[in-house]
Length: 82
Image (tube, rainbow, N blue to C red; front, side, top):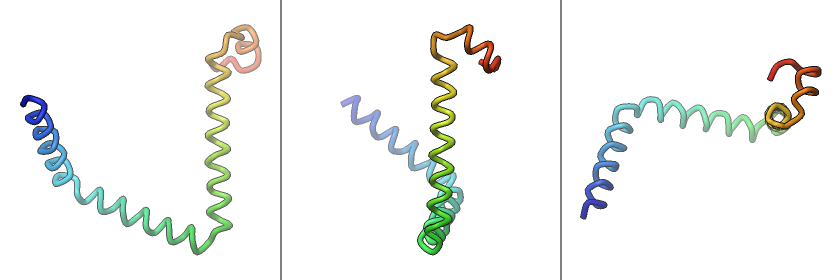
């Protein structure tokens, strides 16, 4: 029985949050629709944008992997950042 009460409380809290911030959800939806239409209209630009984004993801992943690796002396000599 207490599980249903917790679920109802979460549902009420979620509904209150959505009602309080509905303008932000609407703006996000409109922005995503506009960007989606632009991606369909200009596929070359969308391809380049996705390529750049994925490239930055790889760069950040490699940098964090290097910083968390056990090569402390090489890390200090090469980067001195982490």
